Amino acid sequence: IFIELKDLQKEVQEKIEKMDKVVFMENASRIVEPVKKEFNTEPVGKYLEAMLDDMADNLQIFRPQTQTQIPGAGLMPFMVQGNPFQPYQVNLLVDNRDQKMPPIIVEKYPTYRNLFGSIERDVDRSGVWRTDFSKIKAGSFIKANGGYLVLNLLDAIVEPGVWQALKRALKSEKIEIQTYDPFYLFTTTGLKPEPVKMDVKVVVISDLRVYHILWAFDEDVKKIFKIRADFDTSMDKNDESIRQFTEFIKMETDKDKLKPLNAAAVAALLEHAVRITGRQEKISTSFPELTDLLREADFWAGEENKPIIEGSHIDKAIDAKIYRSNMIEEHIQEMVDRGTLMIDVDGKVVGQVNGLAVYSLGDYMFGKPSRITVSTSMGRAGIINIEREADLSGSTHNKGVLILSGYMRKKYAQDKPLTISASIAFEQSYGGVDGDSASSTEIYALLSSISDIPIKQYIAVTGSVNQKGEIQAIGGVNQKIEGFYDCCRHKGLNNKQGVIIPKSNVKDLMLRKDVVEAVTKGLFHIYQVETIDEGIEILTGKSAGKRKDDGNYPEGTINYIVDQKLKKLAEGLKKFAAEEESGKKSNK
Image 1: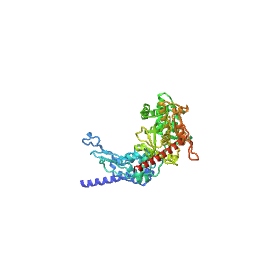
Image 2: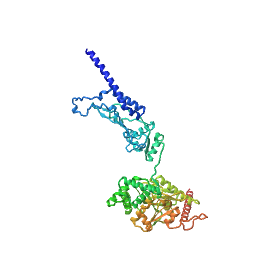
Image 3: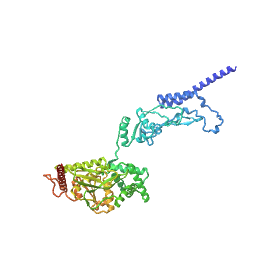
Image 4: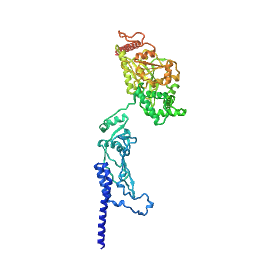
């Protein structure tokens, strides 16, 4: 009887469970049907059917459960029963329901987890780290699916595992969310989500040098990143760009809640943006630097209890920024003032010229004069670059000295050999010299030494030269002029001091207000030249002289004196060589 009763109970139970399944499926299918219609895809349909089948096989979890106390549970509150409904929950990785356009994700911290997602872990009752599908978290790649992902290339390279994973994802157009554990510190239950098909445009922002290095050493770069766009550090200065510049100022002041700018402040900031480029027809696009100046100017306006930012506040912010960076410049000026660095800004000297050099200290540049001297004698050594002999000369400076030699041969050695030994040196220079902006200066010193005509020490010179004697443009013209002006101001202005610059650099002048004021009052002078002859006339006060039809220069001119001196040296060397040869024969 008991066996029959047990079988009967089992049969009844099976029929009840079967009936429960039928009733459940009828009601559940009716509830799920709108979801199937809204997401009418095969994967969603299969998932919903599998979910309902599993629910039908586990209907007991939907019935009221009696709670049982596990001995010792009060001492271990973290050991709780799992959620029986968790398998039926949905882990929504990305919600773009309010997205009106393709997503644009800017990933500022492109770590592996931030880019490709992660699978989090929990510790179970036995102390083992475990995970499940609800712990899967999306990264920026999935968030940007169907849109654009922007990241910094250098950050992606230095982050462990990111660069290779990024290339794999872009080549396969799929991404797999994995547990990233490079040191294998955790043991987890296996979980491998299906790869997600990706449709993402990845934009990497990079320094040009980093890009070129990768292009040269990583073959995948040219295959994956096929479109390159260069961003200029400046833009043309015209009405449209000025309008955009003022709109940028307004946007930044509104965003950072800064005080508004008056017209003078906008003009001062625009002038500084032009000065940064080193060209009058360009405006800098170094917006972070300009924004920092705006914030600092806002501070100075607040210190003066002014409701708006004025031009003086912009100037004060610029001056404060320079003051924080110009310690080395001040130390060099102190050495000039003490006479440790020998610079003459008055009088005349043979074979000596004040050249101008630019020092670059990262975000700060300044110019200072440097004494250039030349010594000449009879000989065949040619022009000796002392900096090169001492391994202190860069390749560009060496090229400038060779061009100097070419100029001398072309102009003065057509009817005679250039039999001269001349040494050129940057005095008190111990840290290396490079650049060709002093090549014209070296020619002036050389001509002065050959002709024995003194050069005005109160006029400094900058400008490169070609073999035809044409003066070419150089960089840092504003810093060089201001550097020599500061030296003259410290030693005392004599109304004669000035700087010779290439004519092609005139359009680049954006000088400080005090320098402009000194030039306007005639206290300081700026001379523009196109040729060596023009420059030597300014430096010596004598006519350079043009070659006549007979091939000679007018008497008394600089070129005539130089030409005659070189002829004398050639004849003297020839005579000396003949006498020396004759002496050798007589000794035999």
